[in-house]
Image (cartoon, rainbow, N blue to C red; front, side):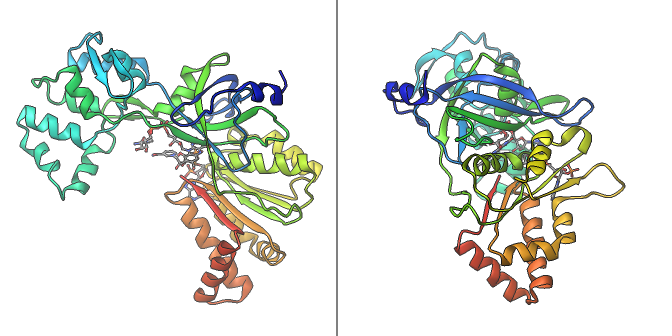
Length: 385
Ligand SMILES: Cc1cc2nc3c(=O)[nH]c(=O)nc-3n(C[C@H](O)[C@H](O)[C@H](O)COP(=O)(O)OP(=O)(O)OC[C@H]3O[C@@H](n4cnc5c(N)ncnc54)[C@H](O)[C@@H]3O)c2cc1C
Ligand SMILES: NC(=O)c1ccc[n+]([C@@H]2O[C@H](COP(=O)([O-])OP(=O)(O)OC[C@H]3O[C@@H](n4cnc5c(N)ncnc54)[C@H](OP(=O)(O)O)[C@@H]3O)[C@@H](O)[C@H]2O)c1
C-alpha cells in the first residue's frame, strides 16, 4: 500500500499513550565477530501509522521485561504469578502480565526500600529511606534491582498488590531515528547499543535495548511513538556541517547525511565517529565509506579507542584538525554532537572551546562568547543521553 493511501486510512492518532505496533522488518547486529559490543540495526515499518518524522527526531519504545527476570521476581515473592492485581490504567490482570509489560523491575524505587524496611525491621535500610539521604540511597541502589531487595530480606512477605504498588511504571526509552525520511518513506531505522553487564553474581540486562535485540525479531512488532526534537539539520542546504557522534551517537547523523544526499543539498559534511575497534565496530562503515567516495562526506575522521596503546577519542582528532575545524566554523559550519552525555559531550565541548581559543585567537571569555553566539544561531546543537 502506498504511504499516502495507508496514512489516509489511519484513523487513530498514535502517541505515547497509544503507541503504534510497528512491524520489525530487519534486526541485525552491526558489530563484527569478536567485538566486545553488540549494536543492533532495526528497520521498522511506519506505514499506516500517520507518523511523519524529521531528521533529528526519536522514536519512543515501550519494552517488555525479560520473562526470566519476571520468573525470578515471582520466585523471590513466592508467587505463582496468577494472583490478580488491579492497575489504575490496565484494570485487573495477573501479576505475571503486570510485571512483564507494565512495571520496571531492574531498579530500586525509594517506595520499595521504605516498604521492605518497614516489613523486615532493617534499620539500616530504613535510614536510607529517610528524607535527606538521597545520596546514600543512590549509592545503595546503584547496580541493584527490586529483586535483590526481596532476596536480601527472605523472611519478609508482600502481597502481589502491595509489591506492585511500590514499583515504577514501565517507561518508554527513546532511540534516535537513524534514517532519512526521503530515502526511506514509511520506514524508520534505529541503532541500539545493547546493555548487558554482571552485577552481584547475576547477569543484568537493559530492559529496552535487550527487548529490541533479543525479544522481538524480524516479523515481530514494537510499540512505538514519535518523540519530536529540536535537533535539526541546517535549513540552508549549502551550510557546512560538522557532526561528532561516537558509538550510537552516529544514528541521527546517518539520517542527516541520507537526507542531504536525497534532497541534493550540496553543503560540505564532516563526520567524526569513534568506537572500540575499526575492524569490528565501525557502525555503518561501508555506507559512510561509500558516502565519502560519492563526495557526500567531504571528511570522515575515525577514532578507535582500543587499537593502540593509548585511547584515541573523537575530541583528540578534533584537536589535531583544529585549524581546519576553525576554517569550517568561519565558513558558517553547523556543529553537532550526539551520544554519551556523561563525559564525551563535555570533553568535545572543551575541545571545541580550545579550537576557538587557539585558532580563533580568543581568550577563554571570547571563546565562550563565540560558542554562545553559535548556540543562539542554532549552529551548535547537542543531543546527548
Ligand atoms: C533523546 C535520546 C536518544 C537516544 N538515542 C539512543 C540511540 O540512538 N541508541 C541507543 O542505544 N540509545 C539511545 N538512547 C538511550 C536509550 O534511551 C536507553 O537509555 C538505553 O538503550 C538503555 O535502556 P535500557 O532499557 O536497555 O537499559 P535500562 O534498563 O534503562 O538500564 C540502563 C541502566 O543500567 C545501568 N548500567 C548500564 N551499564 C552498566 C554497567 N556496566 N554497570 C553498572 N550499571 C550499568 C545504568 O544505571 C543505566 O542507566 C537515547 C536516549 C535519549 C534520551
Ligand atoms: N554504564 C553505563 O551505563 C553504560 C555503559 C556503556 C554505554 N553506556 C551508554 O550507552 C550509550 C551508547 O553507548 P555506545 O556503546 O554506543 O557508545 P559509547 O559507550 O559511548 O562508546 C563509543 C566510543 O566512545 C568512546 N568513549 C568513551 N569515553 C569517551 C569520552 N569521554 N570521550 C569520547 N569518547 C569516549 C568509547 O571508548 P572506550 O569504551 O574504549 O573508552 C568508544 O570508543 C551511551 O550513552 C553510553 O554512555 C552506558
